Length: 329
Image (cartoon, rainbow, N blue to C red; front, side, top):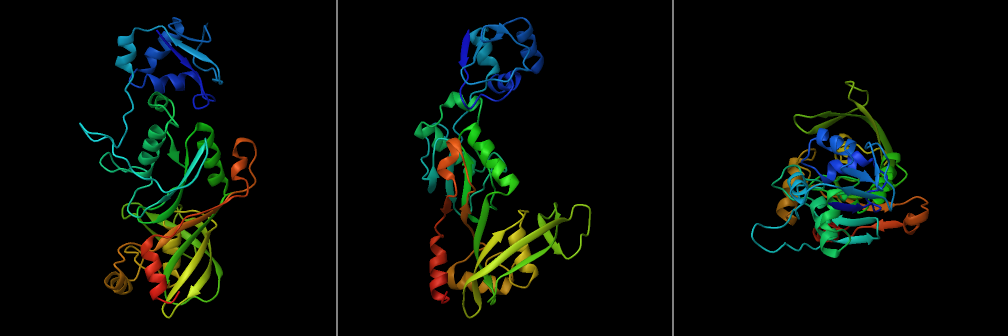
């Protein structure tokens, strides 16, 4: 027999959904059969699985330990090396509370895992939650922390993660509703001395993982985009730019700036190969100089009031300081 106390990360979902996470190797037919036979109960009573769980509820599994073990695949710490001690990674934490973790993602790290061989920021956040005691390993059967926004592998800067179900849902809603304001900084080729809001249509080629910007839609998949930028400082042939992402589409900033003749330095997909070569040889720039530098939160209430009207800023990567200083920015 196993008793499961429902906490904040399990509450708010249906009983059958929770059971499918805990007994993640069991067929659904088995779960519903156990519910019908009262081998699984909710607060000591028969349940059909449609019940919405609340904090303080108790789910009881009248099942043999062998059965529970058979149908429950334990969640492993993704960065545990085989036969060794867990690898300790240092997250650059910008803000933390019981529901939210905001970090500064380095260049070269995926936001979310693309395949099983590569580690991502989600993996590092989960490891941090386990090692710091924010979550127990068994809790990961029901809830897994995740990031609520994404950055390209070679874009650095602010990532917001929900470390509780409430945090994940609330942060995801802010990004979806665009009530959270996102500001990027970048170093672009050429001189742009005045700010401007530009718009157009973005169409993605999924096979090439590349987008095209046009004045008019060119297919049913074309999406309207708006990007606003203002120069921070202007050098002889480089502009240090602040960008406000009004709409958030794949590769939007990189492709949009390139479409007006001012690609981001180091961008191998949308950039100028000659400019990239110069900056690679001069500074060792190997990736686009694009950084998610600032988030501004709207008014927040209740358990999220600590983020109300809060501005979060992420320090620039070290390489940027050398380029900015030498280029007279």
